[in-house]
Length: 395
Image 1 (tube, helix red, strand yellow):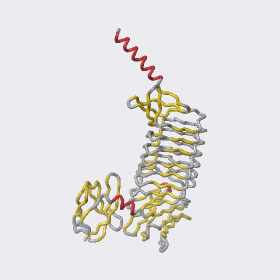
Image 2 (tube, rainbow, N blue to C red; image 1 turned 45 degrees about the vertical axis):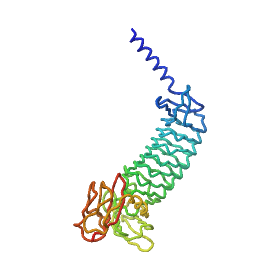
Image 3 (cartoon, helix red, strand yellow; image 1 turned 90 degrees about the horizontal axis):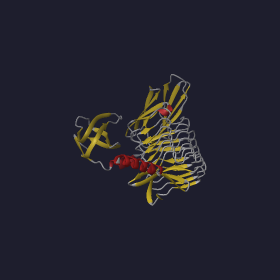
Image 4 (cartoon, rainbow, N blue to C red; image 1 turned 120 degrees about the vertical axis):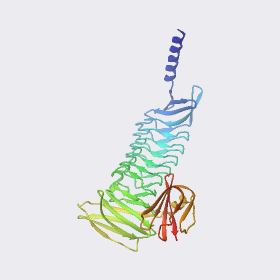
């Protein structure tokens, strides 16, 4: 009998506690997510709310709670909401948090936020600019989809993945820079961005593109990538593919359409100013490379009259490569045989002057290149998903 009474009492207490897990303060509703530590998330808001000044702490029934997240659909369809201040206590912005907040013009995302959820700012058509803090590592699917007034967005180096449709149909967005740590860009991430003129990718290793609808039509767009890039840069969002390989100032550029090779050309250029232009007209691809001093055209036949104009520019990111390489040193240089690094390297690739990887070592602190002919080579060093390039002389 005592056990039965105890069970009934426990259930009643649980029901009472459950009924008290949400509460309103002003126009915002909060939900208790933890009692130890005492934490809440923003759960709901009145449809008439115009300004959301979210506090870092709230007090309910004599308990003070930290506001740590903005929950799913917290401000969904709050069409009168114009501005939001988010405190540093918040670490995540949930799915559809500000979905269809069509009057939202400004948003304050603090450095405490590590993720922006799916559809977080979906169709916030009045949002004009967004600065994403360097604490954020992922931008969810359709996070800023349909933000048609958005003209600029700052994506920090901390971001490693950009979800599919993340900036889809941001029709006023004119330029975007993909930071050097991004490894994945989802399908349609920038599709429908009809005003996008420049795409700059700082990643030394090109990010994986989910499909060929990542970026808009290339007729007005220029893709800019770092000097020193040896990996193939896929512009499959243009239904094309440029493979750029560097040795000193020499590049090998190949063109692919529908995964079929249509030609290549070796060019010499000062990569800080050079731009490759590819055009298709009447069944032919015209390649030209112009650095202001030289032009090396190459004409390759196409199987159809596919029409496209694509620009592929190179930027000098030597300072970025040098900065990443500062923590890794090696000796001797020049060398006749062995090279010893200041720390073990996950992957070491020896690159010849045609851009070809001719030797590869794994988890090595010392490598031996005695078998190579005398000359200049590059070492591509990869540690913890960071890549740097260094030059070595083989005697």
